[in-house]
Length: 199
Ligand SMILES: CCCCCCCCCC(=O)SCCNC(=O)CCNC(=O)[C@H](O)C(C)(C)COP(=O)(O)OP(=O)(O)OC[C@H]1O[C@@H](n2cnc3c(N)ncnc32)[C@H](O)[C@@H]1OP(=O)(O)O
Image 1 (tube, helix red, strand yellow):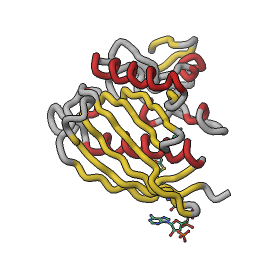
Image 2: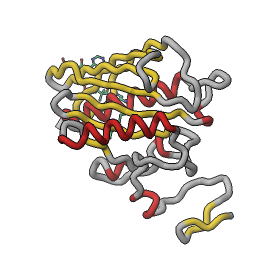
Image 3: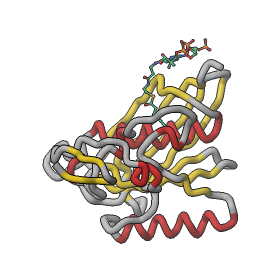
């Protein structure tokens, strides 16, 4: 057993709710971020100075983003930094764009040394989904189509760029692509349909 935030947890690291951890903004740099991720982050912080881009805080429960009770978010469900989804997001309201700067950690392995396709789908769903939420409120993913072009090495820095293309009634059509941090490699592209909450 280990003691964390005054509570006893099993060594298997099954998490209980720890208020201080839940208040942490995981979208801020930590020691596991590589240079390319930090450089991209600083670039978008610079772009945010005139208000065109906005950094999106990232907590480990949905309760911080939406009203209601939240448990642990899928993308923030590990206790140690750098092992899973290491990322931050920035939103541009005028362009209806959400970008995610993403460093896949070793626990996201699929093929040896490369990220699992499901985690690529997850980061696309989360980035484009967050873009849809910030553009028009609560949504659910109805459809997600992905084309994988090049495998993603674990520990690299990726630039995930999503855009709300069209809104028709409750239907929100988005597109997304994932490139290497320098834009040289196109790893994947996707289209998604989100349905706005019916209220
Ligand atoms: C800051 C925090 C950011 C968090 C981002 C989170 C991103 C992650 C998001 C997710 O992972 S959500 C979880 C995965 N998705 C689901 O579990 C959704 C499961 N499906 C459903 O719950 C329902 O099917 C859904 C809410 C998507 C739609 O059901 P509704 O009953 O609300 O809608 P309805 O069936 O009446 O359809 C509304 C319109 O959408 C259309 N539609 C619905 N599903 C469709 C589909 N799959 N393909 C094409 N069109 C679809 C439907 O034809 C219709 O078109 P019209 O208005 O033109 O008649």
